[in-house]
Structures are given as C-alpha cells and as structure tokens.
Image (cartoon, rainbow, N blue to C red; front, side, top):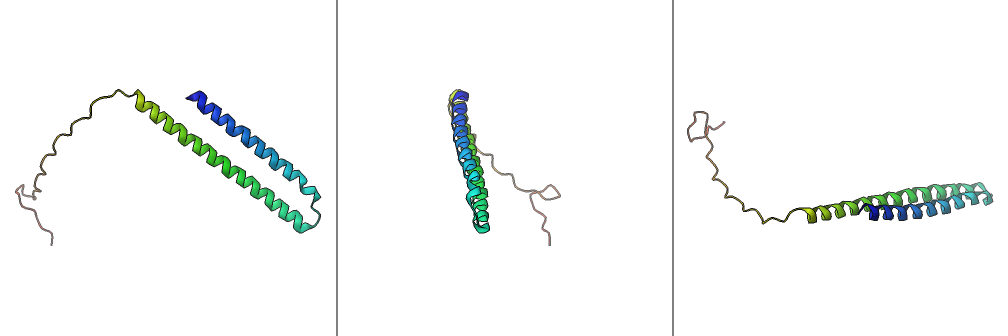
Length: 110
C-alpha cells in the first residue's frame, strides 16, 4: 500500500512540475507586452494561473489522502477477525422518575 501511495504521489509531483514550468515559461513572455494595460493584464493572468495551480494541487493532495484513508480502512476491515454479529440485549424498562421525597410522584414547579 505504501508503494502504491508513493507512486501516486510521484505521478502528481511530475504533473505539478510540468505545470509550474509551463507557468514559468508564460511568465518569461511578459517582456513582449508593451502597453501598460497589456502588461497589467498579463501580470493578473500570471497570478491567476499560479492560484489555479495551487488550487488544483491542493485538491489532488486531498483526493490522494482520501483514497489512502479508504484503502487503509478497507485493509483494516479485511485484517479484523470475522466474528458473528453480537446479539443486542433487551433494553431495561425505564424506571419512573421519583420526586424529592423518594416516592413515585414528581414534584411540579409552578
């Protein structure tokens, strides 16, 4: 299970590195934008792309953690000794409420 998790994490990391290098190449193209408005638009796009990468990577890690948790729980369930379902004892009858004098009547607050 650990080996499988490590392989999945490595695949995620390879994708992340490729995405960050593509982002870096995009950042280096900003020099060609001459008017200030184009330059500002390009900078905002760069920041938005970085935020998108961070968001996607966070979701990827959370999905991996969730999958690992399910796998571990499944493995633990298979490791647990199989025993017959326990019989549920009958519920005892609820005892009547007693008042302050110990009798069977309840004191009423008015």
